[in-house]
Image (cartoon, rainbow, N blue to C red; front, side, top):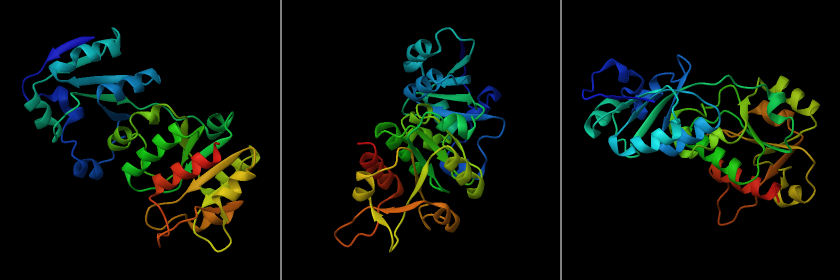
Length: 266
């Protein structure tokens, strides 16, 4: 590991980390150049353990020993910066003391990801990176074997998604689906039943569905505003709903995913 002390915010070696405010990142396609950002020593460690390669690390002095342990001698430049330089470069207070620019891995095929899976979570066009990260954390903690994301779903490797997931985006196998017609055909061929979580007059309750669940289930969750797309509902084999009380008709998508995964993984 190559320690490089950098004392000025305009140093071009820090360009990967520049102006990473949420507003700025939403205006720029972060994966351009094949990179993503991992924030905190814990998240960097999980990314490296999953086989992802850091291009560089920007670290405050108090975290150098942690990063040294994580990189274990790998030839990665580590830019050691004062706290004010880190904040000036990124646009926010880097409370966790370390942030890494990571090479983005090539995604596996759907067939590879679901090969040994019995319970899969599908995120259909989720727009909020926080919800994507929270859904991955639920998948990791509540028994999903894999996660599939639709072509227009927000990026699981976006900095906020990674942070909210606590690095579980590196723990749960995942990839992107194609459009629904081809995706449904591929999943059906692999033996999965598509269970769409949605409000519908003909929906079966989650407890009833879980009591007699098929051997292989792909649980489909829709976007925050409009729910599942019309085509997703059309290709689903079953529509499942979580019984609600108190005049509340639905849950946040990540919360609903957690409830459904818990019920289906028992």
